[in-house]
Length: 77
Image 1: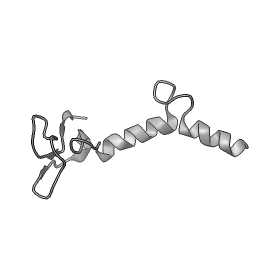
Image 2: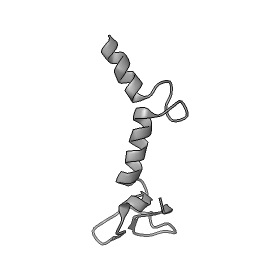
Image 3: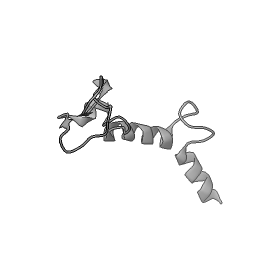
Image 4: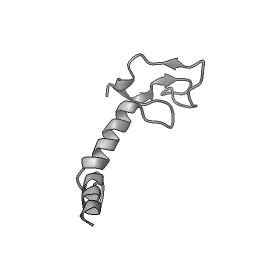
């Protein structure tokens, strides 16, 4: 990410994410370069990374097992 400290949806505040995005908000051109959409929500790019780490991650990401391992166990019966 090129912009981990500012929101893609610039409204107010030092990092642009003080309040949620609205119809009059300034929105960045390339959302994939931002971690946060607004003060509360990650961008789709950040959510994709989080999801992949939950699905395939090791013990540093998810404990005691990742989602892929959980699904494999549930099919075993």
